[in-house]
Amino acid sequence: MLHSYSAPQQGQIMDSHIQVKNLNVYYGKQQALKNINIEIPKNQITVIMGPSGCGKTTLLKSLNRFLELNDGTQIDGEVLVDGQNIYDRDVDVTEVRKVVGLLAQRPSPLPMSIYDNVVYGMNIHRMKSDRKEYKAAVRHYLEIAGLWEEVHKRLHDPATSLSIGQQQRLCLARGLAVEPEIILGDEPTSALDPISSQNIESRLIELKQQYTTVIVTHTLRQAKRLADYVIYMYLGEVIEAGPAKEVFGNPQHERTRAYLEGQI
Amino acid sequence: MNQIEQIDIPQVIEKMTGRTTRPVTTSRARQDNFARRTFFVFTLLPVLLILIVTIALLARSWPILKAYPLSDLLFGTVWKPTNGQFGFWPFILGTFWVTAVGVLLAVPPCILTSIYLAEYAHTKLRSTAKPILDLLAAIPPVVYGVWGLLAIVPFVDKVLAPLSDRWLGSVSIFSVNQPTGFGILAAGIVLAVMIAPLIISVMYEIFSTVPNDLRHASLAVGATQWQTIRNIVLPQVAPGILAAIVLGASRALGETIAVLMVVGNIPQSPTSIFDSAYPLPALIANNYGEMMSIPLYDSALLSAALVLLVIILIFNILSILIIQRMLRRKWS
Image (cartoon, rainbow over all chains, first blue to last red; front, side):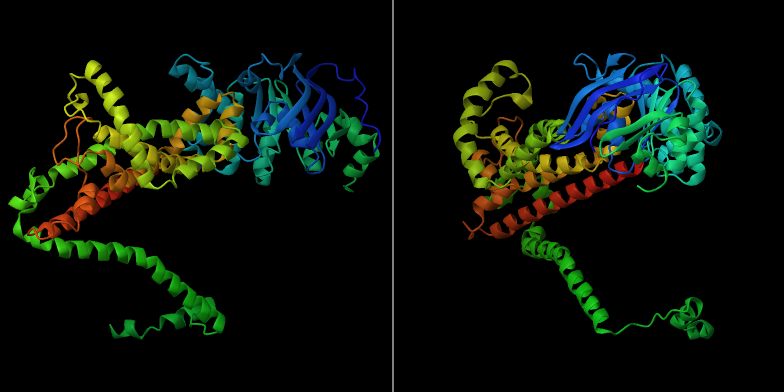
């Protein structure tokens, strides 16, 4: 169809944190993202939704340069975070990933203790100078992730001894501990039970004051619960993007409407 | 007692579960049973084979084991079959020296290569380099032996020995006492090249057992690839790396032809890597079938084979125990 989506009325976003400009991504010869132009608002939750295979996760992973972990991926275009193109040649990819944290689809606790999981990233970046500071930071981030109460008596147990829902909150704490500005979530609750999912969702809502959050989800209901801003994708293109109220209340595009009504 | 014996267990289970535990005798089930038993027998064969070989060797070694105390055979340093002196110690030492040098030379580059192939290399490079490495493992040992004879022995003689003599001569394990080029170092170099493809291949497989999720979790907080390898991947694969080394070492312990072509074959207790040696496999291969009229000679050579077998078994069992301990201690 015809027209690629014309950029979401620029100026609508007062304060954009991430700008994606003319982004095209190819896996080998197959084009996964087609000419993406979007802006992502600061300190809000942006939800990327769409049917499976539409490029949601590809778009998300373009934001922390995770796409280049696969051989044969070609990326054209710009992703600006705070005005800096993260694909510029002189940008240090580890700095990008420190600023843009990722909560993976499946919880991936590192094979070490709960404590060491939270310390891991801080250690990598030498963010603290002594044990006391690390201890305080571990407590702080486990509290933010809503896990402290459950684990403070067994911080030195292996992280894999936690339930899967607890593991995902641990991963959240580990991600937050390197002081990112942006949290990416790749269907972060899809592996979890309803109560654990709800727990993660509440954390994300609490955190949105301080972090720009981008979540990929394939469940419409979760999108409606979380989203301040919505990006709807279909077959590698952004079909519609805008504030959640507008997109859910009065979708401008017929495909978006069809998706919201459950036809796709 | 009687009461206990009267309980018909299948019947009890039947009552409890409502299912029958009586054997099913349909033809499908019989086929299944037949298949399972056949496979079981073939699985048992290797175990039986080891037992049979051990027992046969033991039986053929019996005459000499009866004639001499075990400690005289194992730790005796003189090998003069015509005088009735059968000391295996020089050969045991020779085996260990050659294997140790081979493994020490092979392991560091193998670890680096397998890390590169598994963690850094692009798919294209990997799919070209891997088959070539696997091909190296298919080259017959005798070819390596010829290569050692024509290239490595002169290299040791003309280059390494003079260098070592000048710079490291005062260190006894590097001193040059027998300047011929034939010796432990030449054998070690040949062995290292021979076992490297095997070690790399096993290590590579072990690296690929680490789930990508773990690597990504580390990269996602801004770790570099090397930090990820060092902090996450290597601790996970440590037992496997040890297993790969053991596999390579076992191969080296038993390697015969390529070693005997370059090692010098002098029954002495070596003190330097430039000394000639005479490992157990070379002893057996060089002498079995000749001069068999010497009393107890046949029995002595077969007990040398038995010693080699026992060394390899002990070595493997020890390493399995160590690896199991490492696995248990690790988080997983």
